[in-house]
Image 1 (cartoon, rainbow, N blue to C red):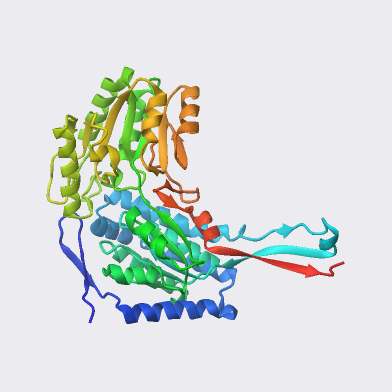
Image 2: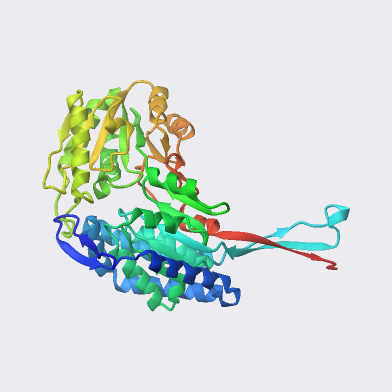
Length: 463
């Protein structure tokens, strides 16, 4: 027998569930079921049925909004107010996937442009790519799952989803809602394991046509290297998002936005604002305002609506982030705020001028910390911002359009937010890491394209 997976509250480490896990035989069964469902082309669900199921799941999720929000807060540690927003986003994402089917189609390919192509008519259609293996992360335990399941269901792919071992409950419960909405279990299954070797077997199985991976770069790039020929994938990793703050920026007007971008979900976001490059003319006033705003954040139990910053996902993560902060301060960085509320929860902090070789300057912190660096030349700030092997979302704050456009043009990022924080996202926009930060494009409509194949049909002799 496989051992049960124990799920703990992120904040106080109270045991909240024990969940049966899958073994190799169970995985084999689930892959076989999914592959057979896809192979039976006469059994593919028509678009109107897929749309109806997605809309019904959105209705069921809306009816269970508070239950799911509390679930997210308990297992993942996200403050309840933000967890409610996550559920609301998930509801919209399901509707978005259904609506996108109205525009999800092929196109005519011109014929008759040469003598050889005369008297022909050609067009493309969309087909599901095949079995989707989805591996998800803990930090948005519902919405990330929806970003993987909803596009697969929309285009007609069987999907098997493996949630993070720390936050499986939201995944299990949303899959149940798909079943309740009328989706046959063959088309949407969960895979629960803490066995890394078994997870690798799942991701790299010959029957998988598309791997959707959200998690660490080390694991994602490794799995990509092991995929069988022809298997497509999308990888979503992290970064160390840069923010340029020009001297023309109005400090009091922007600090709240930057704090939201840097400390949302205790900084456990792949595009969390981490490296703040601030013009020397406003460095002192900005740092003081930032430190004051960070000190005012309410830290504690994420199940309470007043909480703004909750725990990190595991105690070892609090140890890691605390050690990185100590390394930087020992090397001369000035710290504002910080400290430890409990074994799971760090008080938010700001570091001023940590060394360039400190971990907080080179690596993704994934904790409640921002680093501030002064600059005098925006070209130099952009050069340093671009110097790491990650590129995801970046920001520039400026009242000078020339500076804003220069930063937007020269920052190495898939998206540059002007006068907004790096963690801004809508679920219908493209969301993609560059370089070591990812591969492929996320966002529900974009993922639907990735999970589909174009098939061309050519008629000869049409008059």
